Image (cartoon, rainbow, N blue to C red; front, side, top):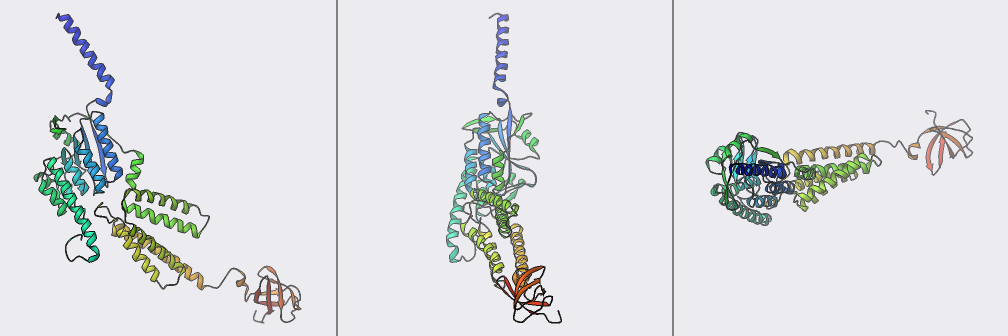
Length: 445
């Protein structure tokens, strides 16, 4: 081939390459996608992460980076995330950050499942057991045996699950099983030493420098990462998904229920205020959405409603505080049971920081209402016809025995058992329909 022709062919090849890059657009440019999971693992965050992995596969991302900080969440949502990571056709890097973050419970599974697992200084991982405190040990009451069986099944399932994940990623299987069986938790230094994670990075830039040139296996094929001077693309949560993720909190769900019932209670007692009723209805709608996302116990919910009903009943029934005390106990017991389902979730209502203050505030409100009602019932009547009894007025006409009197700025038909001249002072003795029975007022009046 002549030099001129070879040079022309090279130019044409370069031009075609440039055109191909231009046509492909920015989607195929070297980049890494970044998602952030901060909070519980729930259907909303699971959907967000699965969509991000699918997008990273389709847009040719070098890898997807999951910045993780979670206290745990639903086992079903965790399973969906793990399945998406293990079957991903793009490298998945899980990074527990920022400083002070933790990959607890469900976060442990997700971290172990990543092709590369990293942690920031000052972070921790572990406590992957789905069983709550007191789920084992000591004498077991007969009523708790069924719950213990469910908890034992959940422990065996999660142990096998985390074992398979650790084996798949060549991580420390023994510690992974220990994190479930003994709820063991460790800091980042120990995690690196035990082979639970691959590296420690001070920040995202440091992480990308360290994993540059790292080899990972995707669908049975080895792939080398190139992450230096790479474009960072942050995948944000959609607005609706963000709302669902926000509502997937047991503490918030209980707050919404209380706020909704309180708003409706105020509206029913003071019709026409509108705003409390609207806010209360909106809170109950949001609470209903939260209960659709989170698994809950109907027994706990019914106990909470019973407790609030007893608190309200104290306003109308004189029980010397028995209904009030029963309401507080039922509400606390129901709230502690509402999301206590260790076999499906490790999320629960914060007893001391949320449930107790809510109960105290609602009890205080109910107590003020009971006190105000009691005081009002002990006072003399100030409105209605009963208030006329004992009032002193003046005879407008002679009462022989019937006539008209002027009482409290009003003219009334009246009857007296004795003759009373016009202008004399009279006192109301009884109210007979729309007519007063009066007598001559004593000289003291």
